[in-house]
Image 1 (cartoon, rainbow, N blue to C red):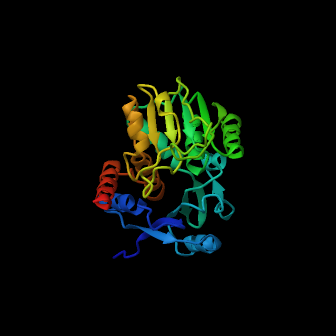
Image 2 (image 1 turned 90 degrees about the vertical axis):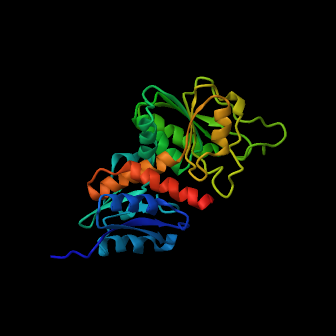
Image 3 (image 1 turned 120 degrees about the horizontal axis):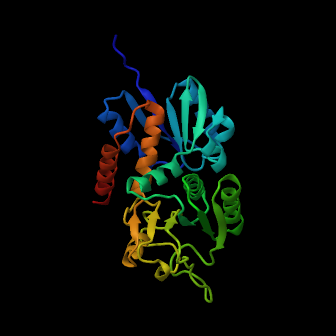
Length: 298
């Protein structure tokens, strides 16, 4: 008997027009000849509850959440995974016959992108720039993956201290808040303020802020780049452009750099498996996203 109904997946967000997740997910579905579709859907904050009702009513297999819905969606779900509970945010929902489970694959995507490159997080000292949603997910997953200590540098003290305390109390890793004076953009500090220094014993430095994202690709986080040491691992969550000014400056100091494309693809691969039950064709998904971003830059 013919089967014409596709399994629906997608993303809810506002804004969401520039979200490229559809490219890599659909490439994966096509590679495995799966009758799945991924829809990019604009959902206003006041319509989120209605939209989540539609996930059940229309039998979506799952949905991604991007800003501003990652926290507000939680009361609308039936259960959360351990990671989602600790992080306090959800970026992926799995629909099992009307029962909605919230997961957070952002941090797992980041740690898997490093592991794919042979980076072991066990015992590492990590410094994260920022304390927003991406930083929270990355901090928690790095701690759960065995990081020894996680430093949180953030300009807003309250959120920086809150994330540091979350890591200390909910994981086995040590954590400390590092004040970040001035502004996010490099060179924009006020008179008398010095740029943020990176401790010499830092193993991994992560930019978890949106500074440097297109169309502001000429910006980079306001840190003292001369305190980046040779051999330090430096990563950026920004994926467009892939080679950010932040990464280029770090590479000049001898750091080993990793772009945000790895995190985006790996979290997409995790979503793929959660929804389909199949191993994601990761190489196909990487190739599709890189090709799309290259075409956009042309």
